[in-house]
Length: 278
Image (cartoon, rainbow, N blue to C red; front, side, top):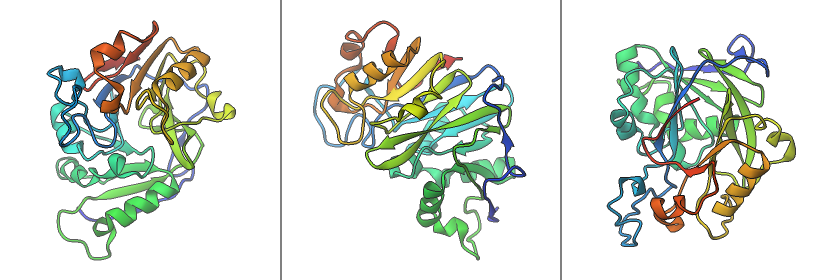
């Protein structure tokens, strides 16, 4: 443990994916569906944060993507350790990052447990901006002289080119979090987008034809860098996705049961532990 392999994007590093490639059946598990503060929020006594409905308890947003042979986590949140224990994830092949905000990267150190049991570096896939942030935030893992037991990480810089992780094809989708570029990802018929409030028309074309779309829907009130509930509903309807699920939810949105009853057919609030087969 402790050696670093830095691998920039090139065809010797990645198996590239054709746009028309067949994706194996996937199981998607929502590891967390909350915004950066989680739900309940520390010190808050609102009706959502004090709710006894387990669906109103939301860890920070992340998903597990699994085929018969490959397991990927999208983002290592501050809750990563508990999310892996709760979902009983014994094998992890790679981590795919959407962007570099702390609620999406802060749990990375805990991949060292997989280093120990799997005895290989953990493959990380991210754009250059996120790679740079990981190297700053976890500098001890990239030092020339490393303390024993630090994470053993293999960095892979991705761009907009589709690629494979194991047998799972990955198509990056550029979305905007105010002025910050963020990656959404399409895996076969499943598309996952979090931390966004704008998607350009060219990138929307990559989403068309998905059977399932996950979007962030922070709250009902306008926000500077996240879709509101109405904006997320409008986008899912525009793209004609049969089933849409909303994530990255704030306590300000309201209780899960209440909001679920207000949604159009085919549109749902995701919740922690929800499992989809695509």
